[in-house]
Each structure stands twice: as structure tokens, then as C-alpha cells.
Length: 112
Image (cartoon, rainbow, N blue to C red; front, side):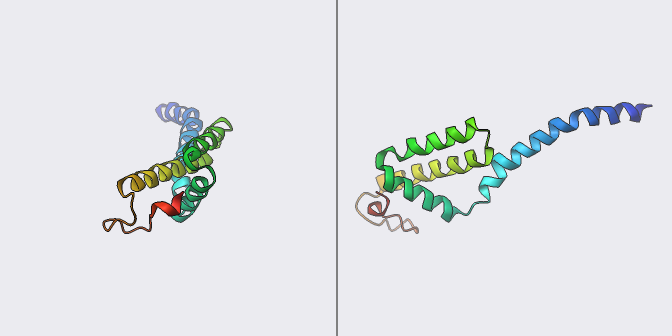
């Protein structure tokens, strides 16, 4: 009889665990499966198009994905926003050309 109680508990909790696992997959794992190059190209495109307002425009896209409950899109736009922040910090740390300590091709003139 004890196993019947545990089976009932597991059956009642399985939708909760299923939803949790699905959200972890859609919001955390799936966006990380996108290649870094795809995220970098998207960040470059937004920086070229919007300049100083690129971060705000990407945040608007992230908010829109959140409002439409699209966790994977929200995660993608979060990665793009972080890439824009990283590119801006690199540009601030190395304003006059290529830094020898940075292996990436992050010249400031290419990003604005």
C-alpha cells in the first residue's frame, strides 16, 4: 500500500517536474546551442544599425520574447545583449586599434 501512495505522489508531481525540465531546456540549454558566431553576427548587425541604442533595442527584443513566453528566443537575445556589452567593454579598453592581448578581431571601427 505504501508504494501506491508514492506512485500517486510521483504522478501528481510529474507535470511540475516536466515543466521545470522544459523551461531549463528552452531557456538555458537551447540558447547555448547557438554558435557563438551567430550571436556575434547578430550583435554586430544591431551595433551597426542602432549604434549607441543597440543594447536597448536588443533588450526590447528580449522583453518581447519574455512577454510571448518564448524562453529560447529570450535566451538568444540575452546572449546577444551580453555580446554587445562585451564588445563595448573591449572597445573602451582598447580605443586606438588592435590590442595585442586580445586574440579576437575586435577592432572598434568594425563594430560601429
